[in-house]
Image: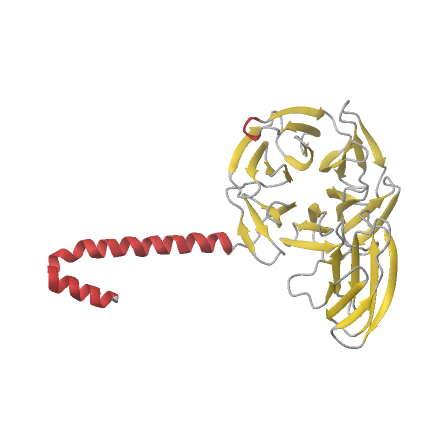
Length: 381
């Protein structure tokens, strides 16, 4: 029965005086529906306005960015949604299924799957908590204006405690990350001719690992877990990669950045996320199987595709016809082998043996530069 028939029935059967409760109920339903529509549109139709930090969230398989007062979530930097109740203006860190954020002198904890609030801590003496790094149970936070680094015990997010690890940093501290290979904390400096420092977490002693990087205003710092570290700088706007215990440096991203702030590494896809505070964008740079310039990560609808059928058999399903380049590497990003295959039609069956010790990934690149990556499992043979 439609609304008009319902109204006529109400008039004829019960009289005009009995219609008021019906209309009141209809009004409540309409306002309820409109309210939920407004909430949904506000949650999904978001645009970053005050980006400062990026963080890969392995729990939701999404990127997070701090956005002034709230936290936004995205798959590819195009469509955004509000991440639960989470708030934070600067550094973020996801560990142990929980998200930790900074804002002023506060550290907040949230559930990394829902964004539900878990607890907060006011850090005594701090006014501008900035970069964050972590190891199990502990978060390290730089105090940009106070020149300190704090250690936060987050084993119980509802009852976090803090201590000062470095009371006087030799520079203005910014990005922070944990170097598991050397069991040390690393942080970068803000200012001209900026340095990179390491901290002994047992003594709190800081020492230089790079004296004058030749870059100004270092902001973000993160590592790939295999001894390679990435640093964002504002002057010039670029991403620099350090290897061999910071003895080797190379520029890996020099375009498409605008005041690149905090950065985050996705170890699964080997993609670096960069929060660009200059134009309010998140850029994603794909380093899977590469040793040179990082490319933007392919989004859904990737124009090239290769399927792995068996140990040495592959099928190119779509892409650009011509010479395709194939490379295979290990978990540390080292190139183990490479070869070229000419494709004149699709689908095309390809033969490429991946029987190399330590092989973890294969990257196929078509003539247009489009890349498709296959991660090899432990039982790939």
